[in-house]
Amino acid sequence: MSVNVTSQAKDNKFVVAVAGEVDVSNANELRRALEEASEAGKPTIEVDLAQTSYIDSTGIGVLVGAAHRAADAGASFCVLHPQRNVARVLTMLGVSDELGVRA
Image (tube, rainbow, N blue to C red; front, side):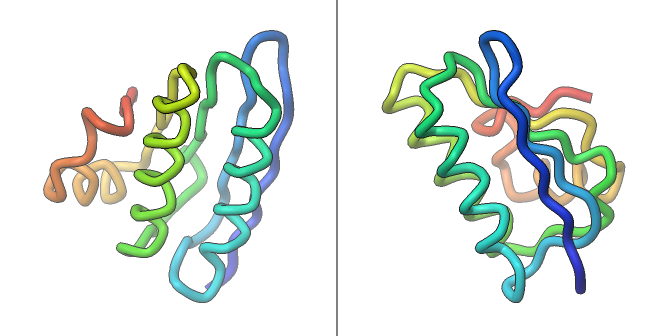
């Protein structure tokens, strides 16, 4: 599986865009981008999953960990535009609210 993770600081937020499929073989790419986002010190971290067709439990764990780190640092964290199947998994696992999922 392949993933393309891009990140960009914009005004008062840090945006991480994920395209492709996130699984155990490439979740570290997402983890590194989210660590960079945390270190940037912006008050908002957004993760755009509009182009993410699949995410496994490892990838979801990375998102949850990043959401906790953001909360500990006083930053807001949200997941934007998840595709239907990704949103369904996040809902079934009960992490949608924790991740601040927005369509």
